[in-house]
Each structure stands twice: as structure tokens, then as C-alpha cells.
Image 1 (cartoon, rainbow, N blue to C red):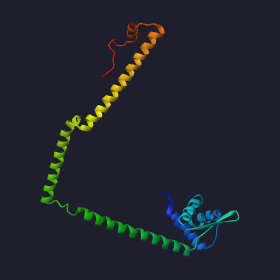
Image 2: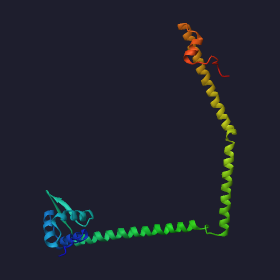
Image 3: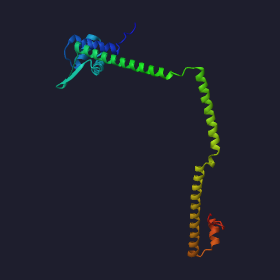
Length: 205
């Protein structure tokens, strides 16, 4: 014996709306759970979620009176809601059609002058040749980069700064050697030997 198929969500929603349309009254959730199962075959455990989904879609009205929440829906309200939703959807469809027409017009304009003609093929070929030529010239120019005046000027600046730094450190070494010699009476040759200082250390001209 085959098992009876349960109701889908949409079927449950439809049956709960029918129940409220037929009763045309105000109910608490517990009352709807009992009536939904008894009169419409909607399990009481699913009534709460179904009713809430209908409230979210503005198909069922709800309000708190005292300590209890009441739910209701009349055919006139449902008809108004459906008409409003239909109007919104119709507006969206019209806007989508306008965007589609606009995009098609843009696409048509973009295709103009791009037909695969002999003239276009010649222009594309010429463009490719020019790009290839540009690439070769750029590569050739790169070979002479070191002779560029700006590059030479920058290298000159870097060399000058390096020279100043070397002479500054050389001056520091000489000062330190002199201090050690005067303070501790150490011979300069001994200082050079112990600290690995070249005997011909001198300033860079």
C-alpha cells in the first residue's frame, strides 16, 4: 500500500488562506493550528511557519491585543495584495524590457563599422604591423637605457652619495684608531691587524 503524499508548502498556504476566507474572523495561533489540521488537513506543527510566511508576504494581517496575537485575512485584502503584487511585477517586467531594448541598441551601435569587410581586414593588418614595429623599437630603446641622460644623472647622484658615505666611514675609522692609540697606547699597525683594517685605507677621491 502506497504512502499518502504530504501537502506541499504552497498547498498548505493555499488551504490556510481558504480557511481564513471562509471563517472571516479573528483567531489566535492555537485556534488556527486546530482548525487547520481538522478542516484543511494541514498538520498543526506546520501551521505556525505557514501562517508566518503568509504574514511576511502581507497575505495575512496580525496584531497583538492584550497578551495574545490575533490573525485574520479577508478576501478583499487578499485581492488588493495580489493586485499590488501584480502591478509591481508588471512594472519590473516593463523596466526589464526597456533595459533589454537599450542594451540591444548599444550592441547594435557597437557593431557598426565592425563588419568583416576587406577594408577592415586591411586596417587590422596595418594595426598589427604597427604594434609589432612599436614592440621592436621599444626593445631597441631598452638597450640604450643606460645612455639615457636621466639614467646617467641618477647614477651620478648615487655614485656621489656612495662616495660621501665611504669617506664618512673612513673618517670614523681614522678617528677611532687615533682615539685607541692615544687612550691605550696601541700601535696603529696592531689596530689594523686585529680589526682587519687595510694598511692602505684612504679617502676616495
